[in-house]
Length: 243
Image 1 (tube, helix red, strand yellow):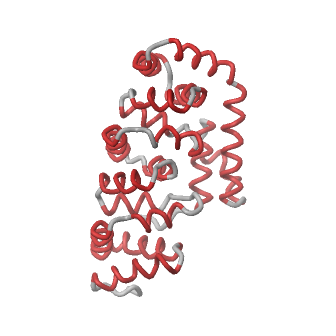
Image 2 (image 1 turned 90 degrees about the vertical axis):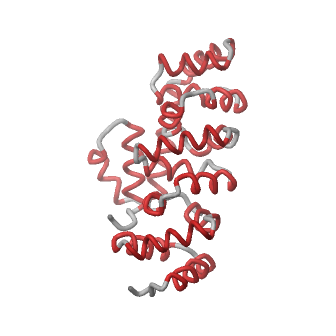
């Protein structure tokens, strides 16, 4: 199991996915800060949307004339998740949330991968717990760690707790945390993770050399206030931090 991936590596991979190229083709971007690459990714997203705005708006207008269930069915049958993301973005937030909530979990999970957090948030926060958990299950099954890390940005605090409890597997939660790059999100995860789940994560790390190293690497990225809480759980686990 690798240590925490450099944020630059994660952002390069996400930019490559957006541009439909191999990450190696954008390797030169790694010399920039992660925040700069993230800004570039969002700018590329904006440009793609602008270049196709007329297409997305026409499809969104069509969606506005149809029952929302039919719009969701039409999207899944005739659009790629990437195109569907553009259409969803062109809809009013309430309608977009309703249409997204009617999509099959697997299709919605892929669509969310093409929605930046600022766009996805007003949609995701209106999803039912049942739909959110179904999307979570799909992402876990597909081992979509980076996608889950990005989705964390769009979840409310309550949804994030539900999301973590659904994933439940300590190793998977550590792996997802390793690719969280947005400012403040790793701290939010550490703050909101329930004590019982945190205890199981620590116990898992104690029994896994690779995940123990990863847990320590993540710990080093947190502010002192959160390290104090986590170190208290570490001490209770019987494994010294310097191990």
